[in-house]
Image (cartoon, rainbow, N blue to C red; front, top):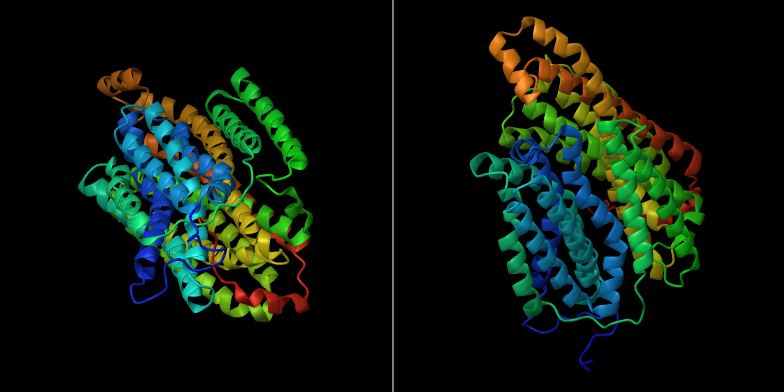
Length: 515
């Protein structure tokens, strides 16, 4: 190891007139932006992916889940890899892996190829994203420079979703759905080429990788999610459904056993011993399920039922990002006076109101009359929660564990979103099948011979019968999503207990959670 290696916490690039801090921050922020916007940019393309690669609506959720499950499951392992092997080299590897996966996804010719590429994208993101955040600490000196860098990183994390909505709409409408994946290739390659020129390598720290913990947790969650989605398609008594749930129980139990015995666990279980922090993770788990479901099902509804173009869909969702930012700003200003609990409770209740309103959507609904109002209320509630949850996740945590505490919040966000979406898809599948049983006889009695022949050949109902089926399933999914937010409110009321003397310590926060 070179004698010029920096000591922990020492700046590596901000000395002298030839400082490259600006370029270093641009590289780090660009990587975070690429990883964050990947979820929303792909969401806009979902109806086109479904049509091009013959996904069913229930199996389509894997396009989201394949990414978020591997991302969330390996996020802490990716951060550990940077500490042990050197953050710059691990960062570059994660970026290049993300680029390769994006290229393979864009070239996919069937659903299996796309899902494999999306899972590989998640692995790349799990390696690059936590390492990018850690590079700020070793690249910028402690004080105003580092604080500004963290501020830019947080702003990119918060704004990436909005950029993804617009970029996804433009790329799908003007080019093709494949470009929501291809666009990562030139960006990632530029980041990989620029990184060694503007960022120095960090010092390595001895340690070991908890591969067993990472594998059992990730595969266990995949089995659990697959069980729910399989149940939506083939019923709860299906043999493979039952095997999936059984495997999930065994693997997740093994994961807990491994983590309890490991000297350097990937998931420090003792963090759940604190009542406030455990409650915070539970709230994030529930709210992530709601927000992932809201984006997934509303994207299908506005494009398939309201006939919105991809670009119009992206614009329709922009108020979500804007109002979340407004809510987060309000919470940041008022938290020192009122504490986080009122914002967690109020935010969760507002989210429940918005989702409950969305359950009223039908094929005669309009964006302005039935969609905009609910998503504004929902978004304000989420903005209240994001700041409060971040602060509570890192409160009363020793400095050397603050990264793990905030990382766990990001893990619960990704895993909660995947698990929640699979449960919502199960509800959607049940409700839409029931509605299809009602609509098919009506269609057959009113259809012409040619329409009947086409239905027998494809098994697909035409509009407006298909719209009725989809809308019924979406409304049912929103009922369960609203229940998730009610659960979050109940957990906030029961579990979160912050004394007035704690408020001063919480004033320094304000960043929302990462991707």
